[in-house]
Image 1 (cartoon, rainbow over the protein chains, first blue to last red):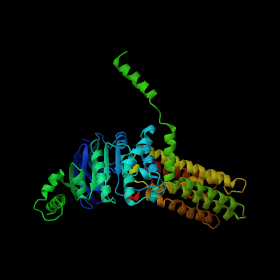
Image 2 (image 1 turned 135 degrees about the vertical axis):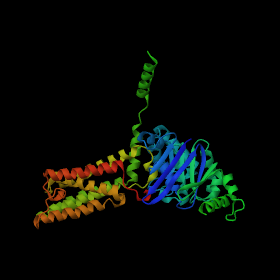
Image 3 (image 1 turned 90 degrees about the vertical axis):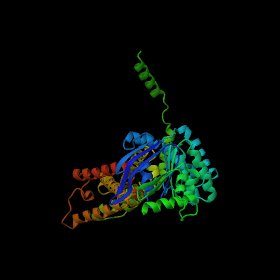
Image 4 (image 1 turned 60 degrees about the vertical axis):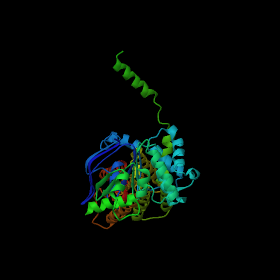
Length: 247
Length: 224
């Protein structure tokens, strides 16, 4: 298992963002669904080693991120795209991705080729020398994905990766996700249930800091049978689970 | 030779033959880091402070003005250094390996050294009140305040530390003429350049600031 989480909790003052989450994930694409404020981003940030948990146990790629040496090993094998990616507008696309490749301690001889491949995979090969300040929101999102995958991570964490992408780009991105999921554990946090249906083998639904459903997209769709709210089976399942939990 | 010895020798040979990190990758990383932190702009601002000080020293000032004037340029240089701690990249950069603390440390030390050198050079042969020692102490101390400010408030607000301390320092100097005089070594601009207590206080603040920015980096309000 690349992700093993037991009783993970994160509090911000009196607010409990993540409340005793248990989760296990191996290679493949794992979808994390939930309404705003459900705790998805906090959970992802803890998995990205950007924020320590208040309590609970977290093991990533068989290592303990609480220990400095093991955290370093995890970070070398990690790709992370946050919900709001900051960037220096004077960088070109290639420079931005190269900067992260160098920071992630990739072998120097492999950096240029890895940057080229990552930029091509997000279909920005023609824009490699364009300054970030000249790109659209969707293109910037793809640059963010490129920096996350440049080191061929074993654990890839993507927070709302399809926000700002047009339908054609989203279809291409789902194909990329499926490809990445063959070798790595890819955790995708999203509001868009269609992304989950198209790309994820497993899905967890979070509400108020807890995981209230864990199964396959087909299981989630089955939960929505006979439920009135939602246009698509997955939406009906999503809505049915949340309604059941809240009632 | 035992199996353990063979393993030891093989491991030692492996360590010897393991290719070292090519220096160009390190240089490239440093260059990209410097660009993302707008360090060239900070260097230009430090040079402008030094030139400004040199021009100002060409004028005729009374003792009070001659003491306060360098402090303004020293605070300007310290503010320019500290705003370079702001990271535009947030979490993905923070979780991307071990080089970041070293880059932060190197940038802060190099810029502080450049600022102290530039201001001292600007004052050479031009009656810089307090001399080189004073410039070094004031720049280091105010940079330390700015770095602590960056760690607590964020890189974008780091300039507030040196600017606020400039007001305090100027007031400390003012009290030397209009008593009661402030004599605490924590207001080091109001102390003579050879005052050991003032030098220790400024050095301590600088060390704390460097340690905070190296280990934690500037606070990222968006990532909190």
